[in-house]
Length: 122
Length: 112
Image (cartoon, rainbow over all chains, first blue to last red; front, side):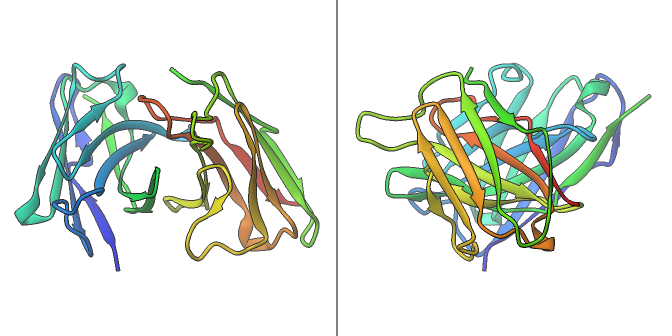
């Protein structure tokens, strides 16, 4: 059974760097075809994709946030870490991590964590 | 970036009746080998999104067969043959063809 759990601060100040950890079980990020992604959702708004990291350490970022985002993995700890620098009030959101699976030609995010809510305020 | 436009924004439904949601893409999501890279998710109140459909028409594991996805190129549809009370929530389409991955604005399904 695959599970993912996001953790990190609930409150950060503007200009600070947010560090979120996704701790997972039930799969390995060293298995070919596997990835972990991050998606966020501002209060009452739609989903926004942020970043992906794959088993081969290939990383993909949202172009609009690329200069501020970093995604890394620690395969031995079954963790993926997302950092978002220079936080702003508009970055207030619930942040989700998700398991990305390959099936033939397709990749999809099939299992999601419950999310962690981050508020940016001074 | 690829823009996805969903309609309607809100869909009141009667249990047992069918429902349909449209998702239109600003660019083709169809590859030269015939695959469409469009997924559907349902976010129930207070929960994370759950995958319903991938590749335009493939039901994810454990998804009831009352859900079906169809369409190709730039026009896609999610259909529910008979809506149940547990189907309420916000439905999102997402394109998985190009980075950045992008989501539609969502369709809120509620029981009349």
